[in-house]
Length: 97
Length: 97
DNA sequence: ACCATAGGCAAGTGTTCGCTTGCCTACCAA
DNA sequence: TTGGTAGGCAAGCGAACACTTGCCTATGGT
Image 1 (cartoon, rainbow over the protein chains, first blue to last red):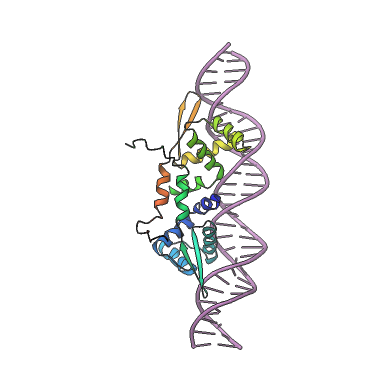
Image 2: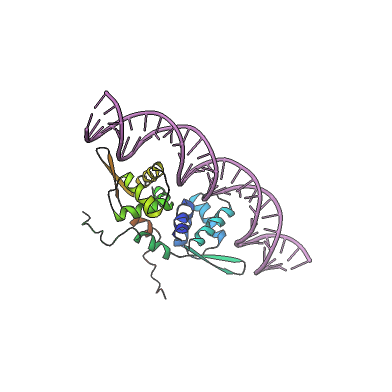
């Protein structure tokens, strides 16, 4: 469960994709593909991005909705909220100088 | 920089080690080794844990201090605080039904 | 009907990762 | 000084991962 989440975040390209979705939610595969190549100079194939999106969806970070022949990808940051609280115990505040 | 952090969190054994350090800070390698085998039933060698601790230290999640022939491992949750805020944009609250 | 667009499936490949095994160094006590 | 304890270095191996290539399925426009 948490395994998929952390594994999804482990790859820098997938984190870039999350960045893109934060900036503009509901993008299609081709949109993401284009923005990654133009803005970040990543020369990745369409399939590579598609597989990354599948990993992100398995982790619950991205939800998809089909509409005709287009598939839009929506970011879901909810899983992210839990991953940190696992190690941030409540009794931690130690006066942080 | 962030790469080391996410890569460190990608492995379930390393996350277990963080759990152990939350429960009891400043453990030695042998202590962590023993607790992982007894409590979680992980049959891992000493080197395996040592290498995991090196990865955690490279990520800044664990700091070490030597004292004689013992090396104590201290948890540092500070890097964790930044990883979520990367994607949690401030303008996100959209009435969450 | 035709063709272009948007995406999916599956096999193959090179690299990275996790782990083991074997030997070596530093510290402490008898 | 000898022996035991705590840890480190490095080579090697199998599995998982990221990415490519090639072909295939739908949907939409003309």
